[in-house]
Amino acid sequence: MIVKVVAYGIARDILKSADCSIDLKEATTIAGLKEVLLQQYPDFSKLASLRFAVGEEYQTDSYTLVAGQEVVIIPPVSGG
Image (tube, rainbow, N blue to C red; front, side, top):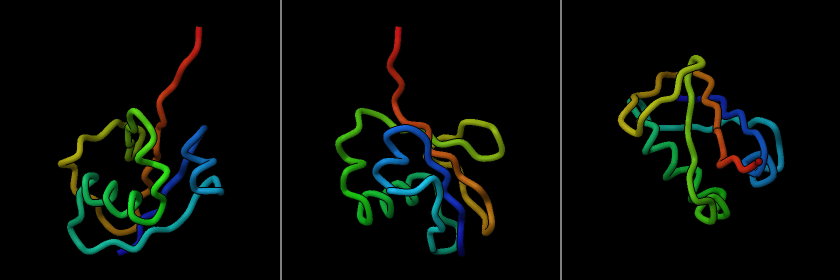
């Protein structure tokens, strides 16, 4: 199944694009997506944390993805 991944900030820099399509096995969770991203983009392992949102809501690692969903990567944020 294909999901669209949208990235902001440092995650966008790692992907070298604002978005991409990732081919996953059926019934893959956010945790499974993280594993695929780490394999394809090892620089994600350098980040202290990553959050993922689907449908404008943050999701946990156990959330099961379905084909065609858009997953947004929210990188760590700093500021004052």
